[in-house]
Length: 220
Image 1 (cartoon, one colour):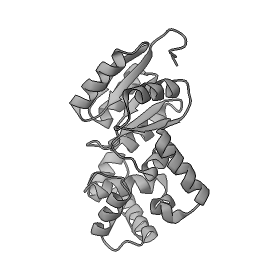
Image 2 (image 1 turned 45 degrees about the vertical axis):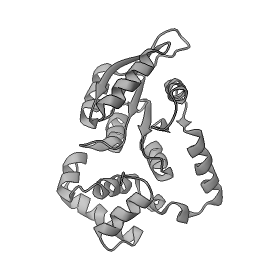
Image 3 (image 1 turned 90 degrees about the vertical axis):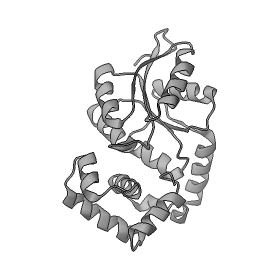
């Protein structure tokens, strides 16, 4: 992996479904010493293919995108390259999303409310194989871990696959649609759905959507 400490540019792929966001951050990064954006994608599928083509030092990735979404994109890239360095860059500032993104394989997590300096710092740190989490979110996560209270995050009892399906369901996708997105059978999605509802003690989809919004794992 390249490093800005070696004089070689840190190569970056931007994966975000908002062209204005990508354009703004491309300008920011390319005006920064030793960072170069080599490709852009507006969905996870394309982002995965571009990663295979360019093998950048860092993938900067949104979570809420059409298609397979950010978590599945992380999982697919990570499955093919365990050493990949992915920085999540999201509107979602939920502790549950941070923890599950990191468990899925992300190297860092910042929100779209962060400043330009923080974005650059995060990319440089992740490119060196280090973890980076938005400092405010990291402090909150550490405090809740100290409390060791599952009630702080009701979604912590879900497995990574269950959490991924929970988020896709909350976004309005059917079992058949989810099966196609993440390449498993509709029957398997149905089994996960049943387990999710039991674990979270939910009676219907309306309750699931309300929980997702209250835990800030999907946009209202």
